[in-house]
Amino acid sequence: MGTVSSYVYGTPRIVRFLSVGAAASLLHLLLLYLIQLSGMSRLLANFFAFEISAQVNFTLSYFITWYDRTPERPTVRYVIERLLGFNAMAVTTLVINMSVFALMLLYIHFMIAGVVAILVAATANFIVSSLLIFRRREGFSRGTSSRWRF
Image (cartoon, helix red, strand yellow):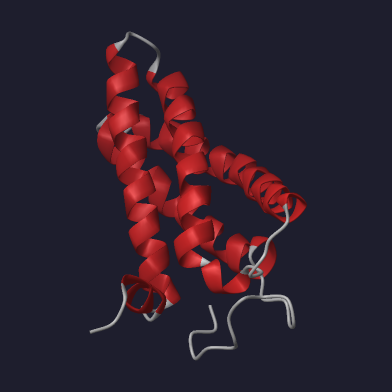
């Protein structure tokens, strides 16, 4: 019988990414719904829901999706640099998310618009995370080259 970590890290990265993304997306949608109940505009509620879920997404991404690309003994500076990079990327994906959400609000229910916006932003998130934020660094990353290149 293997350990939990052997099951998690033995899972293809795209499955881990989608699982983490699903958790962050469900949190986003739950927060969107709850915040808009307060009477706040749906656009502003979406902004706050996105920002909170983005921080949860970073934490889960660091420890689950991209863990093998992190050093065994990360410095505070390393983690802060990744967090800042992730949040810089989140600003871009926020613009994508908000633009798609605003456009979709004209045509479909706000919760479905939220789902569409999340899917479009998630695609950008994976590409930027893989190529920049959590890129593999030879001699620095925790994991060895795996068959799962992404």
